[in-house]
Length: 601
Image 1 (cartoon, rainbow, N blue to C red):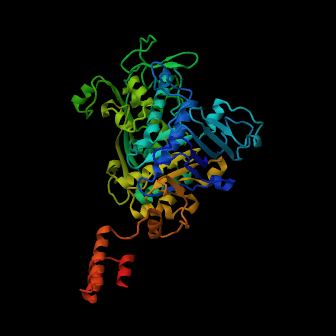
Image 2: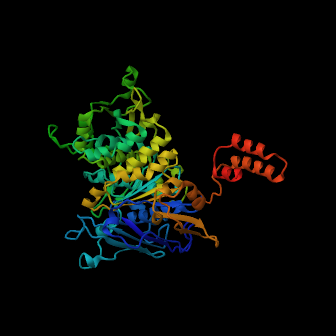
Image 3: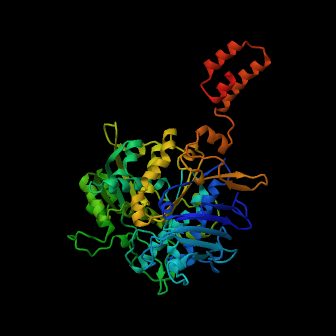
């Protein structure tokens, strides 16, 4: 997708963004610019509303997701028993206008020209259901009312969120979306249906808990001798972080968890129970939580298997199952604190070319497919959350949602744990644990890694200050590194259109961006926050100029250094000190700067 405009008509606005706040991204879009990657850089001082723009978009698409998802628990909706439940006519941003460009989904819109650009409008009036309109539909087919499936497929395939800090409000709708994926999986358990790990919901918030899954998926799936272009995309990992390859890792999967599935009926309505309670349906045998991704039935000699657990076993160097943890712990075979009477599957990987070929075969040469399996297993940790808690999560507007829903169990109760993940690094004689990497290295691998995973999808990326832990050199190269993640020639072939919005306080990111893609948010004289584009060409502008013009910094040195300069200047103006002595003091105590040159002159 490519954004055209966003306007907030809500009487209450949204935080620092007032009623009537509007951003015009771009009015016209040709085939070339539709494919190109030019992230929007949202800049401004602290509290200027940069992050609020990301939050608004996340909330809008979460609400649309909730309308068009097929699998939702019945307690999700407003009722007498659940007065705070979901209502399609009411959203957190209750009155807005949003327009964007996209390409059509081939499966949903047969016999259409998929190379042509589609224009989509979404308008929501106060307390009314949002209306999705295909504005230029007549250029493709005879206009008709959009079906549920067609409306959903005019929305972005994924909304990918990431924040380097703890932006609670950006993660707000994404956390709710994780539980929707879990409830979708529970529905498949009850129906005994095969479920692909790919979620129906589109919102994905990839915080640090997904770092190992992101890195592992890329290192295993992109290092292909048969596809050198894929391997080239991993070059920044080596150039900047020095990663040569993955050495070893272990997956520990808990296999004994049983759960009450929801009650199902012909109309797909579900009744969920508390984790520890019972459903209205009499279930004598609780299904295993992993049942639907561990479907049996394939001949073990077959090359293709349905069971995702079997796929992992076939990729492993060795694997074994432990059902009596206490016994094996006493013998020293298993270390760590594990639950009594619980069962675990251990899969150990000593990675070589054969390991990677196995993963690439079983996961269709697509790193996203492997990552989605890891993500689903991590999402299944929600089995510890009761229905009442999920009710509260879905309906709450509490900005401290993430603190109230720390649902990740202790390590021994988790569905999936990554262990002994070691990598080989340049100029290091032995393999090291990934946890030994610095914060900046983790952040670099995380942001570039998730871009590589979703590079071929119709996605909207919402990044909140993704470069905070980078050194100046990495900041200067970050936009280029992001560009290298996306294969423009491949995008032309597959008609891939994506959008990225990124907040920053870094002048380096702005200096690497055309002025048309830099949005400066600031407080106006009337007290309202507004946006404007810089009055100068930002691409190639000096860091000092950007720091002064965009962030309002009047000096290029620190405050303490400035006080030293001011003291020398005061002595000069008072006439109480010898000029030569002052020049010596200036040269011997302070480094070079614009301010020093001015004072020297």
